[in-house]
Image (cartoon, rainbow, N blue to C red):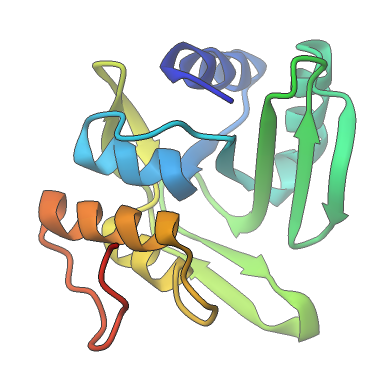
Length: 168
């Protein structure tokens, strides 16, 4: 599990290394809402593909050396000895504009420029609400997904697609 201080520590580490990252997934939803709403097993980060070696080196220096899943160029998940997990989503793009993630089969997923969110009272770059919703489509939503999307809708007003399963 990662707590707020873990997330901020990782973001500080990457920034100190000169790497760009914006928060995605469950922590991204919480950042957009501005409060931690649940326990998080991992931290999803969108990173620039041309900085992936820099990001991996910085994380390895902090103990994130175990590769859990290597699905590059789409994603890479690493963990440290304490079991904290980070799921990296490399994109081709820029820190201030947008990025495109290469998906299996050659398709690309578009991440717009990062939005502003808050974790632990600190402003952080994160994936915007509409993109968070798009990331939660195309598969059977878990209870956690449905709860995250309900909180995101309530906290930001982002529209959920018709028929998106309600939170339990």
